[in-house]
Structure formats: structure tokens, C-alpha cells
Image (cartoon, rainbow, N blue to C red; front, side, top):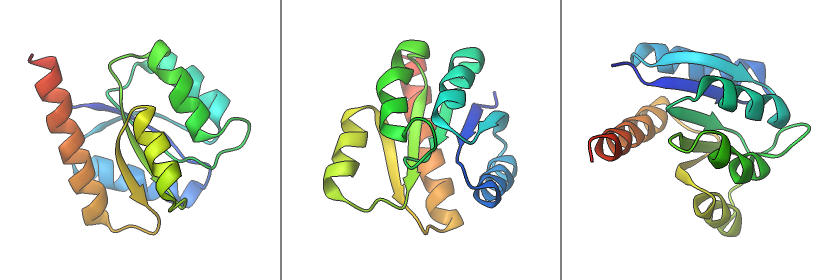
Length: 128
């Protein structure tokens, strides 16, 4: 079963990198968003298995998206990828439900490794 992924990133070329990597790893891309408000609407509509989430977004930042998203889609797992390399921000993101946190710039290997760990976590939770 292909896991459904939503990409939330305001920089188009970075979204393209994510899409390329997700397709190469056989994930289903159900949507993409460039701002926090649209992201919440798409999380509610698509109920993705995984969301790749930037923290610095227009209209609503990624931490606020994390705060609200769990109510809209409680089984979704979050991979935060951000240029914010601050221990308190990383801790806050993880406290709000981020399973993984990658600091930009990143390698494709970091991305695929994080996706695999999240997929394993998702499978374990779904299978009890």
C-alpha cells in the first residue's frame, strides 16, 4: 500500500525536490500547499498518512499548523523540514507531534531515511 503524502512548502523548487524523492520512493502525493491555511484545508480533505511540513510559511506558520492539524487528521505523521536550527524550535515541533525534524539544507538520503522511519512508525501504529 502506498502511503499518501502532502507537501507543505512555500518554495516551489523545494516542493519539486520533495515530489521527485517521494515518487522515487513509491509514495502517493495527494497534494501540495504553499501556505499554512491551505495546508490545514488539504490535511482535512485528504487525511494524508505523512505531511512534509516547513515551519516558515505565509498566512500561518508550521508550528501553528501542527497545533491544529491533529484534530483534523489524527493519524497523520509529520516530517518537519526547516531552516530553523534551534533546539527550542525543534523541541516545540516534536512536542506538537513532529515525528522527524530535518534542518535545511539536507541531502536526499536524509529525506528518504526520515520517510522510511516515519513509514515504519506508521505501520507499527496501524498494525497495533
